[in-house]
Image (cartoon, rainbow over all chains, first blue to last red; front, top):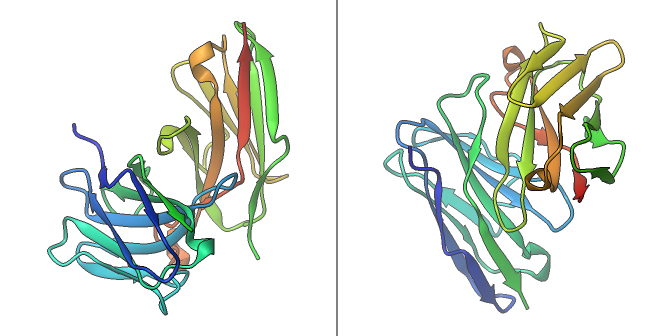
Length: 114
Length: 116
């Protein structure tokens, strides 16, 4: 089966600019996650969707980050305006459901904010 | 707050030897644990998972051990190969009955280096 697809692979922007990331989960996976991974650290959950509804966005910096999954399949994550500390890899993952099933990750988008 | 941590940041082993990667967790409500492998430039790759009603689970060349008494998790890799070189993360999932969903908390990772 095809894995989680993410684009772009790399993005370099200046601080205060905006950026958007796209994710296409594994077909049939109802749950979609966005994680932020800062260099040298483990991934940290930003937001979790179940179909097109938000399950958990408690760790999403809502003053600058937003995410949507309008049709319950693809998702976009946006940062506006970006800060230097947003430099990280943004990983998208999906799972069959909210229960005890493993998350399958894409290869991420590496964001550099200068 | 709750956290998942790894004891050793870097582990070097000889090719063909067995590797043991350790992880401590602090959330006593966690009932599901996963080990991931992350190679440079790639996303975390699922290796093996275990639920809290088990203390051991085996896969192909890998074994996960769970000791709930001391809140400790380990990943054993048999006959380590150069392709096993990567960062390994343990992740825990709080009991979904408490509303945690499938939200995973990751540790900081252990770099496994396989020497020829």
